[in-house]
Length: 383
Image (cartoon, rainbow, N blue to C red):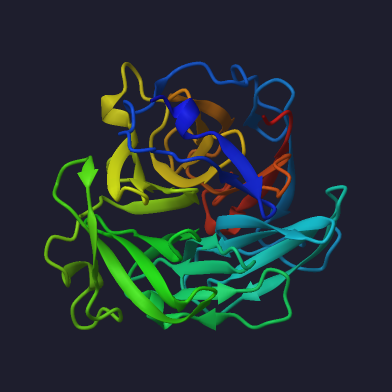
């Protein structure tokens, strides 16, 4: 069964989501291999230093320590994980700030025509907020990438204060992805011997209480898995990853994206994209740079997102400063490349609710410093 069948997608609730069973009882085919992008080769860099396929254009929507265009709000340092949310006839893009102390998250509200309506803070006073994830009820989970860090539930549209969600565990959080089918939230851990967790709220939609579980499996890269409760989610004195015998280790958990039956997550230490089949409870590799024939196009794997066409978009932390696409045909190829910013990383990939605009940040921009972050928008003939 090829990944065109497995990854066919639909759009629900204003956010891109895959539809149809990813697995349907069959194991994933071979991990993705280099090939031609459905958008063709990258062109010469544009005026902003971005290489894009023909028909695509880029613009800057925010720079660290500068007022967001048309507003008085100063954009945060080190922009990292992000997501888009529907907001009336427009939408909101949220972005974390990966600094300590300070951290937090900001939001930019866009009008229907793409112009910027406002910008504002939705979280402050936290530590090194790296990635996170959107919830089906319209909140943003902002994760602290520090030892025994917290998850904060924030409100992109404003009007409510952020809430610390202690029950989701204290560990070096990276990203989160909601699975409404099983009513759980998957959580990655950015440690060289980290784990994959899932949080099962007592009441779906209320993250104040629930059970934290860890994935248990052997050392293989594919096969069946199980889940076990974490006895002490606050991770003190024993770290959460060391509390359950047989907990599977992952080398530097990064981005996490759920799509109808499957949780995709990345590990930077071994440049892998994993697929957890939530229906049949097994894991497989969707991409591994060590299994690529020839030169691997995707290295430094980090944040991940998906589209209605069944494509995955994976941002690089370092590498060639690219966002790569992994297609349903098991092809991996560069979608865009940032030039002149080799001391940065690409963060926060996210599509507007209608799938026509793509947002991402260069965390340290041309300066190589957290004060030089740049947040971009790309438009073009997305499929």
